[in-house]
Length: 268
Image (cartoon, rainbow, N blue to C red):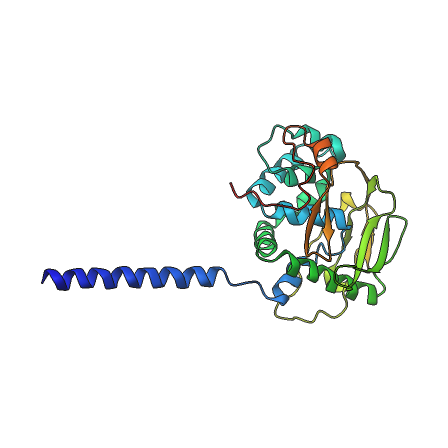
């Protein structure tokens, strides 16, 4: 009887282990191409540096929620000065940097589920997420929506690492960043995944006064910043690079080594 009881206990433990493995495997399932494009649709046309900052910050959803509340309560602060004002906050530096752009934090604060999913997708495969941005930029360019303007430069070139043609977006003035706003259902043309429509987002009108978002890409007032954006997309490598000098210039309380050039998530 004791032998039978011990055997049953071992079987029970084995079943629990198998069930746990199954649950873990299901939770580790990667996001599909359709799901990632759905998540990336509202931000794929951001300048490379701002896009990179949003992707890094999305891996800290609780910090993003707190930063969005702070930004709403200090709506008159933006740019590098806003970032310096939150140096004592316990948030990750990637999140602190986004207080320079209140309209971006408003979007992220309004959609916590989207932030969570975006961060999970980026941690699971940064290459898949960056590839999605390139697909969507190509579609927007083909629709005549993505182009060089007074606010931004659109550059098409080959990545030396992969020989892949990539579309880069840079501020026309390196020290003034304009956050584009657009209707994803319009700028990309016919959306190819009806089951996964792009995440919609309607910005507060005061960020884009007089702008007509219905027909294309609108720009609000530029944000003057020198050091707030210290990340950039490494399209060929499929990850995000870090400019240690810029990072250290604005994150005075949390310095990093000069040779730390890639984003590393801090899960602590």
